[in-house]
Structures are given as C-alpha cells and as structure tokens.
Length: 375
Image (cartoon, rainbow, N blue to C red):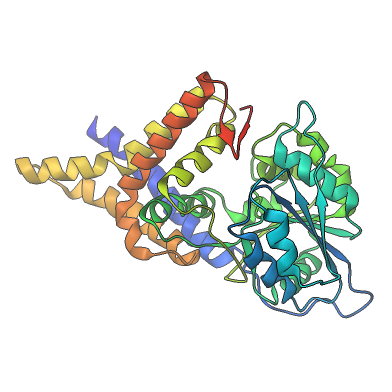
C-alpha cells in the first residue's frame, strides 16, 4: 500500500519536474529584435477593452506612447465605465494620432462584456494584425517590435505571450504565480508548437496577437461570445482549424499587475476557475484533491514522522520534488524563489477560491466589475 501511495505521488511530481526542466530550455522568450526589413511593416491594431480602469490606464497609455514600432494604432473601448476611465486615458494620450477612444454599445443578450467589447474593437480595427490586450498591461518601448518579429519568425497565426506578473501583497505572491506554474510544469511548449491536438493548447488574454485572417477563420469573438476563458477558447479553436499557435514568455518586455489584494485575487480567479475546469464540479473537486495530495499532505506526513519517530525519507523526496518544480517555474517567470516553500499555503488559498466559485455557481453565477457572468 505504501509503495502504491508513493508511486501515485512521486510519479506525477517527477513528471512535472521534468516538464519544467524541459520548458526552461525550450519555452521561447521574447527578445527585442528587429522586424523583417524586407517589404512593408505590417500595421498593428492594439485593442484594449476598458471598464473602470482609471487606476491603471494612464500608465498603460504612456508605455504605448513610447513604442518604437512605426506602424500601429491603439483603440480603447470604454465599456460603460463610471470611474472616468476615458477621461484619464484621453489626458494621457497627449493628442497622439495613434490613439482613439470609442464608446461601447449596450451588451447584447448572450454575450459576456469583455468578449463583446473585443468584437467591437476588431470590427473597428484597420490593422492586418490584431493585438488584444488588457488595460493593466505595461509595455517596454521595444515590446510591439519584438512581438511582430516573433510572429514573423514563427509564422504564427496566433501568438500569445505571458507578461511578467508583478506581485506585491502576500495573496498576489502566493496565488498569481500559479498561473505560470500550471503552464511551465504541466504543458510542454514543444507539444503546443508541434502536436496538432487541441489538448496541447494554452493562451493568456493579456496578450493575444492574431493575423486578421486567422481571427476571422476561427469566427472572432462572436464564436466565443459567452465563454469566460476567452483565451483558452481561442487556443483550442486555432488548433482545431489547423492554424499555428505559438507561445512565448515576455521576458520583462511586458508586465502586468493583475490584482492588488486578497479580495481582488480571490474574486478574479474564482470567476475563471470553474470554466477552466470545463465547468465540471467533479473535475474541479478532483483537481483540488490531487493538489492537496501532492503538495500539502506530504508536509503533514513529514510533521507526523518527526513527532512519532517514523521514517521521513519518502515525505522529504516528495516535498523536494514539489519545491524544485515550483522554484523552477518561479525562476523562469521572474518570481520570488523563496515563495516556493509556501506552495502548501498556495494550494489552500486555491481551495478557498474554488469554494467561492462553487458558491457563485449555485447563487446565479460569478460577478465581475458590476456584471453577473454566466459560468
């Protein structure tokens, strides 16, 4: 029985560690290289939905103003903000001809707010490349040039790039990096890039860069109008259409601070976590139990062993494998290595987040920025 228990614990952890090691060598990093100088420079449409983003939008606009890429437009859609987001953004634009603010139309039945905002932006965009991003993403002056160069080099139909996640408060540090951890430890980048099966797909909504024709082939946001996890929906759709999906790490050229306190972290992740598990309560429950099994219970086993004098070697091996994997993902994504030792606490916090999602499920669905979202 003990050997069976160890097998079901050590094997997945060893596999995750191997994937993390493999990704540390093969996961592409964005680099500030020049775009293809042969032929015209493609026009980029940077598309930003904006709902109550007065806290962050000025800094985002300023970083986009500083871009060295010569041929781009920035469209911001004010989605019925009540905090003066449009005024703040307009003041930060300094009259630049690259920028335009448009007012969003009323939300139609069957649409989620962000998806409807992005659909409107896509219809207004003039670029041959559509770059969907969030209002809280900040851009190094060479970021758009690097994105275009990466898309040209890889011939991607959809290029998705993970910004560096800035984490300051305790809840951010313990929860937000798990997003990078789940990609780097569970999903080999080589499989995403070279195996056509949709199961090997991932994307992040903070940076989705489409060739316009590819966006139209998958049906645009109209095809995923009610999907909370729009980024993953697009990743699956691109794979199903046999288009090229490519991922990269932003390597500091893009940065984002998603949330600023526990309440924002809890609610932000709770609105997505159930959809990320296929809207299956059983799958979500299995995921929580599995992560307790491999990341929390070994620490309890170690404590009990120390208290009773029983052997602790097995528990130490399991704990060290978990620490190695979490630390590798932290190092790659420029997070704090010391937070790896608190992985059991991170799992407990994710359990609380899952409980919030389940509560919302039976109470009419999650809410975000004053709107009720269907799960």
